[in-house]
Length: 47
Image (cartoon, rainbow, N blue to C red):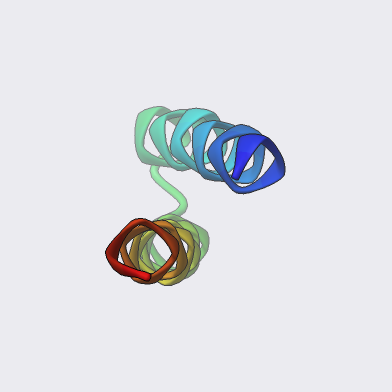
């Protein structure tokens, strides 16, 4: 769980940087990555 949280936070930080730099496709990919980690964390909590 701790690893997933770190990966989620890293994806969040990179998405913010991509947004600031105007790199839209990289920003959207980072958002998808964040969504993946969030779903995995939710699944772990539910079990």
